Amino acid sequence: MKSANGRPRFRPILRTCRLIWTAARGQTIAWTIILVVLGVLPVATVIWIRLLVDSLVAGLRAGVSWTAMRPAAEYAGLVFGTALLIELAQSALEWTRTSQAELIQDYISACIHRKSVEVDMAFYESPDYYDTLYRARDDANTRPALLLEHLGSVVQNSITVVLLTLLVARYSPWLILVMIFSVAPAFFVVAHFNWLQHKWWIETTTERRWLQYYDQKFTTSAAAAEMRLFRLGPVFEQAFSGLRKSLREQRLRLVLRQSASRMGAALAGLAVVGLALAWMGWHTFHGSTTLGDLTLFYQAIAGGQGLMRGITSSLTQVYGNSLFLGEFFAFLDLKPEVRDPRRAMPRPRDLQEGIAFQNVTFHYPGSERVALKDFNLAIPAGRIVALVGPNGAGKSTLIKLLCRFYDPQVGRITLDGVDIRQFSLADLRASLSVLFQTPVAYDASVRDNIAVGDFAAAANGSGVEAAARAAGAHEMISLLPRGYQTLLGKSFAEGTDLSGGEWQRIAMARAFLRKSPVILLDEPTSFMDSWAELEWFDRLRKLANSRTTLMITHRFTIAMRADWIEVMKDGVIVESGTHDMLIRRDGFYAQSWRDQIEASRTATPAAV
Image (tube, rainbow, N blue to C red; front, top):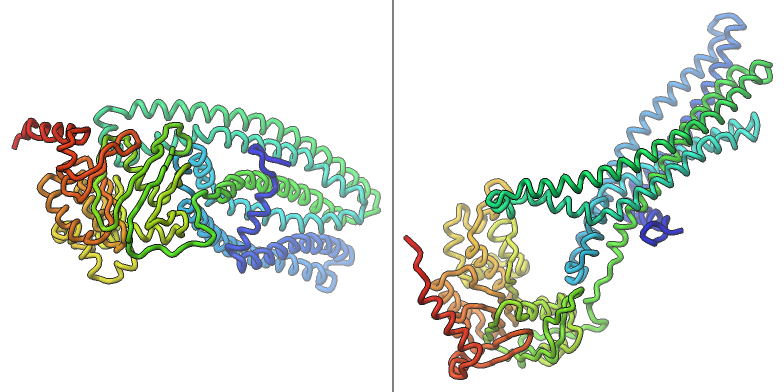
């Protein structure tokens, strides 16, 4: 049996049970014991009440005296004591379930976090991945707790119903069928509509993601300025409300159909129970059963039907939650294509030959546009190589491939002649110090923002400051309210925001902290003024020393100071040489150099 998305319907229930057991084994054992106790105690109450009624009738017939009424008092005490035990067990169950749910939530969050950093970068290029992630993250933290609650209700109520059924069966075996048929219609109605609701939930994933997108535009600082400047509020509100109206109407139509069907099923169940009670009343009237028997029967039938309805509702909730959790497990089942080799080779501590791209052809997943085609490039060890070219030429793609965020479809990339796919991912990435084109600004202290580059190196107190000095960030940090302990970002109280250039220096310090043999820099001076970038390059040359450095830049004033320049266009290298060599060649680089210099000379100075 399969669900709306083609996966087995009940497999997620088994996987969820294993997840619960793994996350909170001790609490689950205690939870099960308490449920069994709570399943038995209500049946004991019904028996005590039957005996209490019969003993009251017998005592009244014998005359009101302590001796005659003593059995009734004892049974009343048992009823009271059982009720007290139920309350204590309920309190213990609440604490146990809360503890269990907290552990499960922590475990699930850890699973999502681990999988999020395990999957290929290619997944982030796919709308299907975002749909899967949205469905997994949207309900994963609440669904297991709900499934657990309803599963516990099924276990507890089933124990009670089985015992009550055995009590009722002593009057007539066919009464067992009465209890079953009184709730069967409701079970099928709820199960069917749970399936329809899950189907609707799957089909509207994209629409609900659009709602989240519109909502974030109202509530995030990144869009706040343009939302006001371009008066986008009404535009986004109209799009949001239109989608909400459509989804709301679909949901309400589904609920209306469910309510009508459930009402019909409930009336059928009440008719069956009414006939059973009439049958028992007829026997009591003719003296074949006692008043206590009638009381027990009424409590068993009425209570049993209520419990069966509860079991039915809980089962359908278990089933419904399992359908939603199927999406969570589908997310956990995603398998990365970029993986460690079976037998990893040790990475080179220092490059002797350098980096080489050999006949590399690559296109991003889901895109037909070729980013690199038969691409070849050699970066000699210990040299600073600048890579220049227009936007879209494929420059940043080289860094992503070197980091093995992706693997090329054709060709190979080597370090000292060894295919980088022969190294473990951890070793390969530990060999690289990287400054990405858009570095991440973390809401953390300055020291922690730099330390994420290499926590081991940051453990040495002087390592962070040395990296900051190398990146030209130390003086700026010294002027902050608490120096290296200053909280950066404006999301939290007492946070300090930085300019784009200052954030870039922090990110460069993060990259420089890692003492790796290869340095990869993507537009490292894009936020710097011309005075600062020249000073920065002098520090870079001292820092690089004998390390192999690839620097992507649009600024020829920086590129000209590199040991070697590679000019890239349309996914291929079109020119190579030093600055002077390329100028003398009078090709693409020379023309771009003249255009950039001319633009700098004719630019109108800003008013002071």
